[in-house]
Image (cartoon, rainbow, N blue to C red; front, side, top):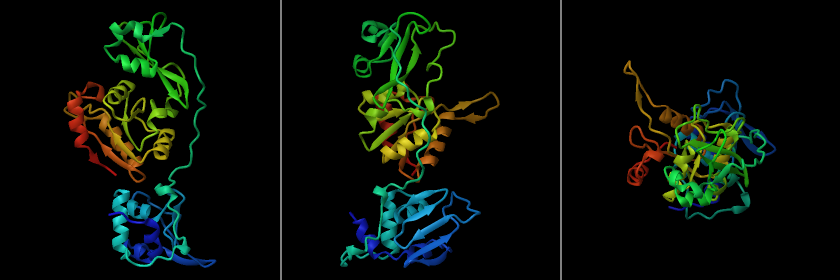
Length: 330
């Protein structure tokens, strides 16, 4: 059912919402606007120094958790999606969709339905680089390059091939952010490099996402670890970016929260058993950490690939089955 959020908030009694969740903050009056102050009630914030306030219109703020609407408040308390939070508010406040609404109250600022959780972190300056002249167009080396990429990929992402020096016989994939090439990915296709190097020295990996410029035009994005994983999903028609690893930095978190409403994690399912019988899965452990960092702000699902595989290893059929069975984490 479609609900007008302004209408809900115009009828809302914030006391009912706070009472429902057992919030015991003190009620104060400031220039005619009721404020409730006290310790932050969110389960994942152990607040020993009261840092939380909420206005009668449901707009809340916390020094640690950020700012949001009453719907985001309920979303955090219920650990549910934004859509489910709306349904909870409707039930708690006995909202009547047929009632006459006084819009002059102007009771809600929804923050474009996105809570402002984190301030913009400091990004490294992304300097444009010039690719080495020895990086030839990979079209002219397609007999080797086709092991990892298609001709369409080569044309769309200006993929090169190293013909001499350290990166001889390497596939070179430029990384573009804000319209300029800021780094590149190198994959040894000949198997002769003594110390394979994925990215050149001092590459600002913590501040960039591969394919971000193109992906940010859509609401939903798939998150993968590597560039070849990303290219494979893009070739199948999915909107994807690569983390260039398995770590979500503050910079990358900021970009994901700012530009996307839905995130589908698709990290490696590299389940391993050591000689002592201990099981580890670095890819899925990283996926859970990323989900925890994002799930209270946007919708998050986890795509669990077949054991031992990453996206680049999967067939299209294997991936589509995993995608269909993705588990919602937030």
